[in-house]
Image (cartoon, rainbow, N blue to C red; front, side, top):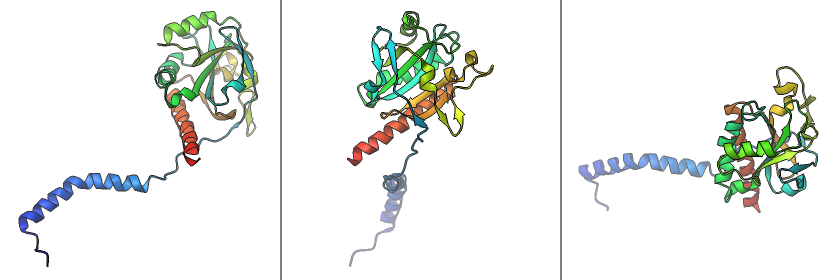
Length: 224
């Protein structure tokens, strides 16, 4: 028969349980939630294949980004002073995160910004905005944040549930809603999220959506 614990031993055991209890609870919850389901982004439609000319005057095709997550925006020559999106926050919250983690999971993320005249029409000369980005964005890498000359309207010409991204009105920048929008496109060319990019909070939310999309691919990879 095992000896009964003494009063001092009981106190010591109780003290030990009190110390370890939080850790035990955390471990238990980690096992319970190890197969939890994370939020999965919806599919809002297919983005048509597109071509554009980059800042090096090279013709590019969307097919070359089939293994990348792509964030599409517009950009204007007056940026960052008068811009359809909050360029400073896009740089600080998303681009710098991509750049600093380019050798890790963020290597699959690219930003493509189409230069417009502020009223939605494409502009060809990318040199001025390239200089502005080089000054604004620390460690600016044109392979990660790609400037584009092309018809952005064709890319934004997407409808879902009777709603189109090509809305017009005085409340929008330059009268064209699409100029304010960020498009998150997955590796198969599907639109997974649309958010305005003119506020810090919305850009933070887009960053979170990029992370969700990466989790989706990580899960698919782990199941193979």
